[in-house]
Length: 307
Image (cartoon, rainbow, N blue to C red):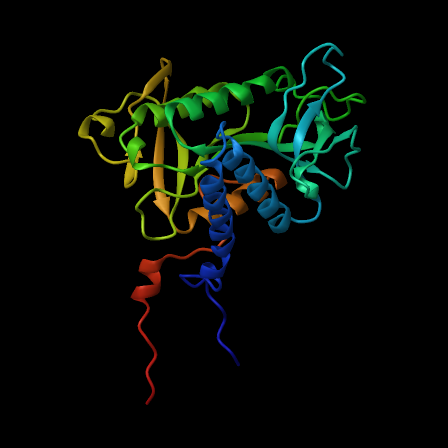
């Protein structure tokens, strides 16, 4: 009789899971080279958006569609501007598509689709590099969703006007450059997302000079009192670890932001997205052990030798 299986560290196939991250970054690097000859350097940003949509479309169950486009609600006036978003994840088994616009990205994920508000599960804003400006711009753009974040609608409401209760949003950056490694103002900007329903923070796919295939995860921290000695006063590099000081929200609520680098963060991001859409996400637990691994764990495993 075989022994009962136990969870293993690192998990089976964790390195293979990271090939998708490498493919995205390779395509982004090629775009950066091509963008040097463009008068307006936005080409690499478009490629970054397209690559993230492509990966999410392959990774997520077929129930979830991935597109760029618009979120439409019958609660908004017809002359009100409908903002365009980089990545919309929606229930494609149930959602009608109100209209489709073609784009230079010829892929299915590159088309811009208009999705009814009640079927939208997640919106991600994609930026090339993490900086104070790009973080502020991303959160400001997600703020265009605030009119749809009210409610939420009652379960029995016939005509849905708001985003669903499980909706969430965040930011994805492809790079943190050395020129921004001490830019704690950029990390602090994440706290401004507290007013957005479901804002989870974000990820940074790569840090300049980091040898391992580590992804940075930015999380919001909540405290009931201020904490001392924020790391920005110690000039600690964000390419290693970052934690901001506290910002007072109320007398009993203080917020900060933390950036941590791990090779497993890329896989955890994917499974966190899936868990949040399914309503099973729990901050106390990892969402999945698939893709859980690191070079340090791998090196710690003793090699098998013959008799």
